[in-house]
Length: 215
Image 1 (cartoon, rainbow, N blue to C red):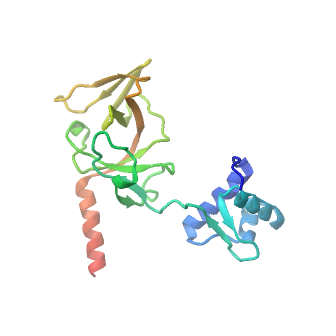
Image 2 (cartoon, one colour):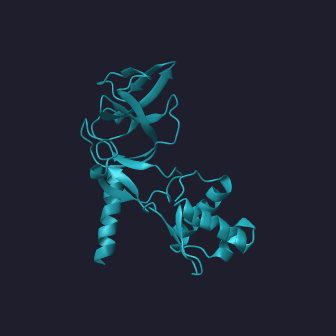
Image 3 (cartoon, helix red, strand yellow):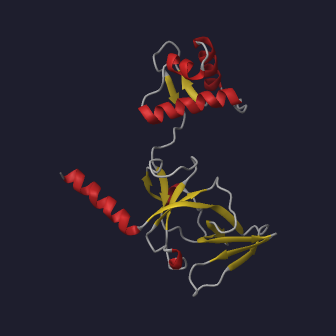
């Protein structure tokens, strides 16, 4: 077993395999990969054997579509509930549901969902039970809405930075901005909000699913 990082060529093959499986629910054949990569079958076979050694996939030679992903990503992104203060933010026990997001927005594979709690962002039209989609791979910049951890508690706020000073600004005059130093180990940015579903819309989706199952 190897633990070396993938080369660009190997990562390209792996990405093609993942994309094919996600779209077709079956792995590609060697011929299909060769056609996509514009290489011969031996080159594809060599890449797959290397990916198998590096434990990126499980490759079974001489079997049509003999490719399996190791720890494949579930179709739905994880949705975290109302995370209590002091608990690990993205721990398995806090997952309350999953949601297929790719049909709605473009996001990285690390995107997750989080339910809003409280009224500190009500003037930004965020209400309790609204569902936020948060992407840890998107850079936090001034004016963006972020999810941050402050002293072990998650919070949703507007992000403002001036040098090392960061202000997490609520969208409700009842609350004061949270001011922190970016190097304070009690503070970290979890991700940037890249989309949302209003609670009333989610109820309509749930009702539609129940109706479809009943009919």
